[in-house]
Length: 170
Image (cartoon, rainbow, N blue to C red; front, side):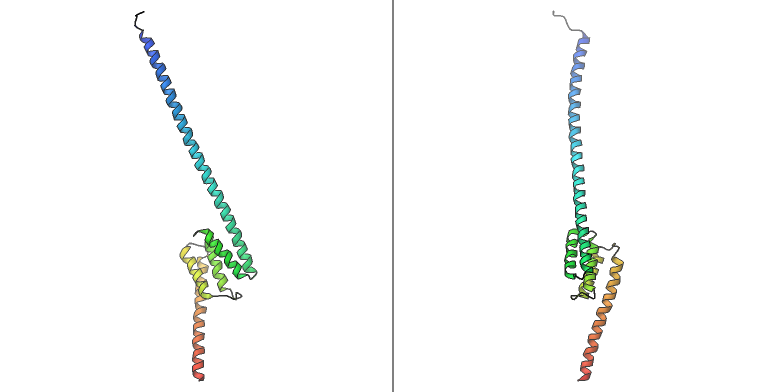
């Protein structure tokens, strides 16, 4: 009864204790791994959701641009201008904001627009160059700015000529 246990028995208990310990540790590690996997999956789903939201937003912007172009072609310049302003506010300094600015410049420069204003047109074209320097429309905007500035200068010259004619006729 008072006999000491054999060494082999001590090792069996030690091995069993170690086996239980490592089992518990590995189970905990698996739980942590699952939690990390779930977090990554949630992040991936959130990113997909943001992409879908962005895609919907871009689709809505595209529809507004199309509507703005149709209104412009129909001669409804004020409504086209409003649609382009909406596109500009939704685009957050990203394309197609450049296209909206370009369209706004064209609206104010159009010869059939009863509210044409070359200075406002130049303003929108310059804003396009400032905010979207790498835009595909920047070269066209530069050309429009040059043409509109020549028109504005010729208007000023015409005004001066008319003033001189009035002075001479007195």
